[in-house]
Length: 67
Image (cartoon, rainbow, N blue to C red; front, side, top):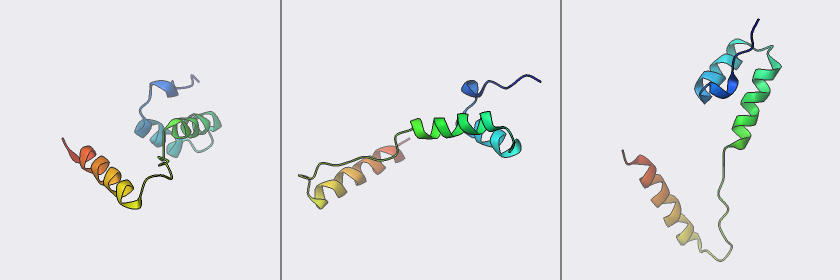
């Protein structure tokens, strides 16, 4: 049986594949590698005040909501 091309799959497709093929370790590791490659958090400098950090976060959320 041919192994699917995990790199060609979207994240949602790969997640569904892993869910349907729980014994496929290669698919699982491909999915975990893709999740780890995504930036998850932002570190703000200690010199920023909490108010400045709040403003940056609110601006970023508002920007993502724009169509």
